[in-house]
Image (cartoon, rainbow over the protein chains, first blue to last red):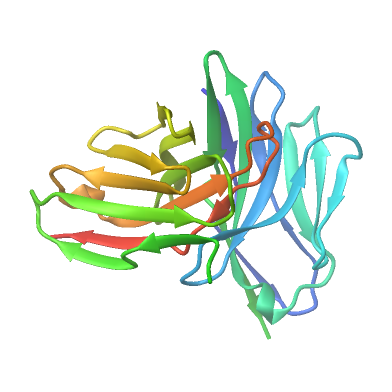
Length: 115
Length: 114
């Protein structure tokens, strides 16, 4: 079965420090990769996505993610975090399987930015 | 106004009751989804619909049913609610141009079953 693994359930970090949130997926077929962010009492919002082309994808608020096909990873990074980045982050894949489709989310990583 | 609206936002009910959660969208998307979120488990897909006449089971469809009343409306029903269906439920939509389209989420319905 396909799966998405987010290795860290919680990542505490000080403000202005760099951060990496890890995501690995298992799939033998082509996938589309996404990172979503969830703020308290809200739904998920798209942060960035990898479809094809350049393996480095950037978002408008300073996050970036790099697709590594050989390691089946799509880690999320930010060189300097802000208090407002405190949220839960979900890695997700979509793929076509046989007659149907799969939409799989990781279990989430809670980023806690401390002053 | 929100593009994806879920009602109610909160619901407390008793075991054995029939519950309906509703979702409507103004994004003009053909595809709609229902997920549940449990602490430490992430989001798991319950059902998805690619158009009004298309309904598909997701990973955890047992105990749930859905109805796609129109392009803009997709409801989730629990015929006889049980306590382990207590969770945060999300509706989402996406455009129909392949699997590379991101999903757009409502703000969720927090359901508690006593």
